[in-house]
Image 1 (cartoon, helix red, strand yellow):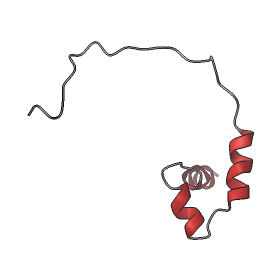
Image 2 (tube, one colour):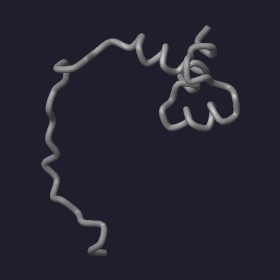
Image 3 (cartoon, one colour):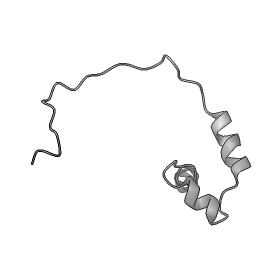
Length: 60
């Protein structure tokens, strides 16, 4: 059962959705249905800050 859920999660991974649609493993309708099933968590978050010094990657 855990494997099935993991595979379903992978199928809906936003980093992979375009690839799976191109391969025919996922339809836009299925993806839209999945997105509409997610809870709206607007406002249910905690703001965090990073106290580390900012490192600019261009200055190496």
